[in-house]
Length: 71
Image (cartoon, rainbow, N blue to C red; front, side, top):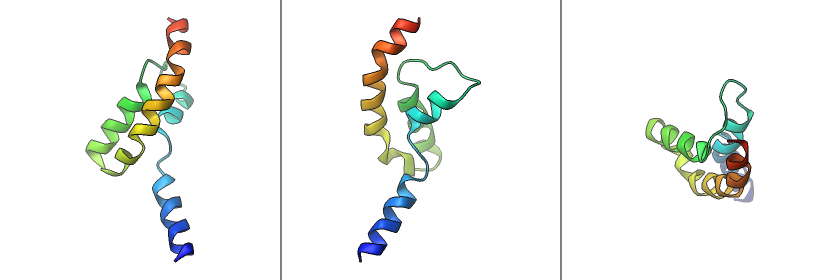
């Protein structure tokens, strides 16, 4: 049972955090709440990143002062 739980957790974490994906994208300038927007777009396509949406929202909120200082 515990092994199945670990495998399931790993599979759900595979898509990665939308905020980190957007921050690491060199062809795109990071804007406010880009990770949340990215997760929403992926959720509409695939459905799975909806699980990461609240976490991306929190990280995007924490990064908001950084984003505003860059503008």
